[in-house]
Length: 87
Image (cartoon, rainbow, N blue to C red; front, side):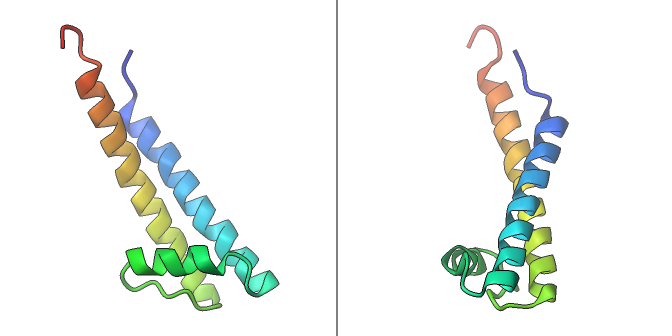
């Protein structure tokens, strides 16, 4: 069985972007909610700062989606390499 690399990459992009979007919006609404998570992400994503603003929510969402896309594609590709028959 092999993974569809494109499908897994897109699904991972949606999940990664959605996670950052929901956490960023929750932080805008409820103050310190998810602040440690957002600070951790700000140490990983250059140009993203864990400040409470709509612009940072958008930037974080884009970073999460791109990160998820790359991670999903790499995971599917790597899995497919190991799932080859005879290895």
